[in-house]
Image (cartoon, rainbow, N blue to C red; front, side):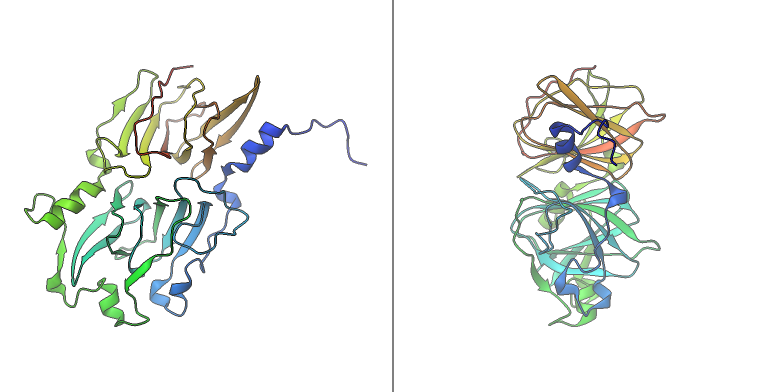
Length: 317
């Protein structure tokens, strides 16, 4: 007989659990992108947390419903590429492991940039781009698309109707049509991309009075925000933040260390501890907080469902 004296999970705790995406409970999908079927060179896998991203698999029951943006991971093996395509909204690539080559396309000319760990590129809406792994280890990156229900990408140069090597070069007919990004170039194309690239090594921390540091990736001081914004948070060991509320959703994705997240409602408090690559989706209007009670400093990204600065005053607990 089941033990009826066991405490039942509250509605708030159940809701919080439904808004947590735990990395070890998820599975990479090697068939997320139907346009890649039959083309081994396009092989890559997607792990979905919020929405479907660039995949048509919007009915995945293990994925949270997206509001202002989607959130997923993509693993790309060595030597593989994603054919050049465009979205009707912005899309960012944040590299977690390996070195990713991204090509941005203007007709038959391509400007390429290499991104290392914690580097990011925000792809402009409507601007064709592709990506390739020329490195020696798999690339793992975090991808966000700036809509809860994005349209399917429109391919510009795909091996289904173009030469394979031409597609690998994102449509550049020869090597002399490919340029490496030069941020100081007078070429307007280089200037445009340079504004969208964020190098982790160049970020200047902004220390909050509450005791943690923000590195702006998308928003004022980073790549220009259009539908959402994003900071990388450095949370020293022992620092805790009092509950706060936003008018839009925000999402925590743990890059290192551990993070304890709490929700409040009508005097009830529930908490969940997150590890590396775990995620918490905090709905709009929900009082929530975070703290680091681990043995090392924690780092996580905070994605906010608005491009506008949010009037949040973080207070140390």
